[in-house]
Image (cartoon, rainbow, N blue to C red; front, top):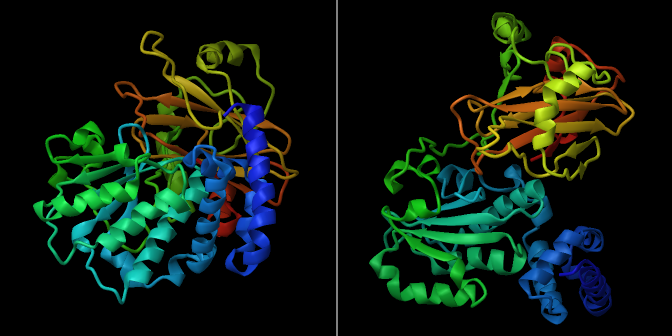
Length: 434
């Protein structure tokens, strides 16, 4: 959509839904969804895109989606609201990325047993995972894998398959990149025609039927389990809840100790590894992790990182409550020809207090991050230098997570204070940007 036309369609959709649907169905909608519809342009745009900008069809889709969200209490779904046995089963979870860098939503069909008595709870689990992902990734699509290896008749549940497909067709528009079906059993050949009809003509081309010989066209071996011909050693277990595979990267002092370890061990690790970086370049606007100060760049620092900055593409900015983050979505390490191995993440504190931050990645052995655990004074910026380790290659599957939390004081603090802060800060006070 052209920008002007897009804005007009979004406005029309909001106005008409408010006038034509809300008065008669207020009790069937969650007020939080109605509020979001008026505020979130991307959400409305995704509905329009999925219905080819036909407003009448878009309104019907929003209506169906909102009624489903109210029925399943999607906004209030959490671990404690669902039976523990659902998570123990391990039939549904998020893990890894496909070759295009999209998160994978796994359905291990052999672990699912068709049972009308528990069907509603299982459908809630699907809603839980999809809503959890949608809130964190704000519209980034998913790849769905139906792993049908070793499935039998007791595992085949067409109603449940149809529900999952319906979630992407109606409830989470524009969230689906592809459905990878692995080792479709022969008993499902006839039923497979039904699955195609459920997808509809606009989405049937997203269906990929694979086996061990060709599944790596879509997912690389590092994110495939051995039974699919891959090398991923991940094994589902619960608790804790399977998350996004983010780990602490290397920093200028080596790996940072986790919050669960003692402060003494953190200090010991830092002391032991501090010598590793005596000959390395220091990042502009940052000191070592134990005491980061935001100061104006010197001419020397500008020269050191001019190559890094020249390699950056035009920046986009994510405007969060605590930080403005540039770039907003992607890190660019330059081309093979330039040999660029570094890029910057610029954090700007938009609060009146110091903000603590951590950087995590799905590939901690490949990247060195300076600083990866520090704080930023109000109204100042900090440059985080991300360096690719020698002999490593950038992958679309690699992800970075910035965690941030506002501190009471207005000045930066040292390592011990930061470690204690992260131990004590409530989880709901921590913002995340991926």
